[in-house]
Length: 372
Image (cartoon, rainbow, N blue to C red; front, top):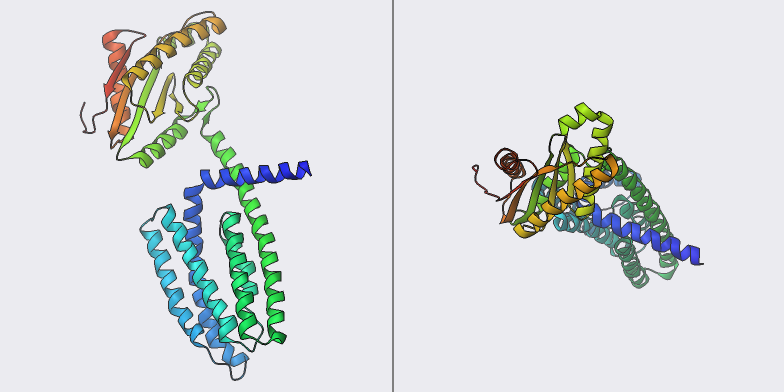
């Protein structure tokens, strides 16, 4: 029993983390699915209205059948516009739920008030097919399933004879049970695929030598943070360059040079938070984007700590001390362009090396205009 509880608890924590980390992707994917599903549902409904009189003698569409057409057309239009205008995460989820509820509403009405003398044929099928299409938290999908089933059982019991409603209730319960199982399995498979993709993505974005982001991964992470934070971004961008690193490679060999870079990665990961973006930009250059911080005093203390730790670590592990020069740019509640910010921090680093000498640091304020 304890193992089962631990398994369920671990599965729940994984799903919570999945919905938190992949929230943007999930919302966009749900909107794409709702857009495609509403269009296909509209086409199927039109074919159904045309073909059913040929199959069932004397069949006539009800008002619910006919009203379902414009309702689906509205869903198609709204989901299409939502994709075109790139609505935010909440907008994507709202449009997705709108399509789900509209579809269930009209099929519910068709299967109950529209055909009180017949056994329901749409609701059980849509129970199984609808929710596995979308990536929704289990509490939401299961909650909607149970709520719709309760309403369906009450309505069919009131409007249909007992000889018919008993079959409606049984078939719909089977549909709900199958939907819960399929939905759970589908979500589990999506979670497994996400974890594998995330693992491979992290490997592709990692500098295996320094244990930090590589250039592409760090740049993308920084752009994402700035895009989410603008127009009032608060951050510090620190650019570090080793002094006389070429001489280390030339005189001590590339193996020692690689170990030196490993020492830099170790020092930076020890000095900064796991949420900060630590990146080997190329060669012996590293940058760190420090989130939600633009303190000159903190930048100065971090710079001193990095230089001190780097000298100590390299002396201990390599037998000689390595120094570095640092440039820092602080952004305090401004609209940041990452490329411009990097240009400014590169200029600050250049001033450290050319004007102040080796092992120095220059700190500047970010200037939004395209000038220093």
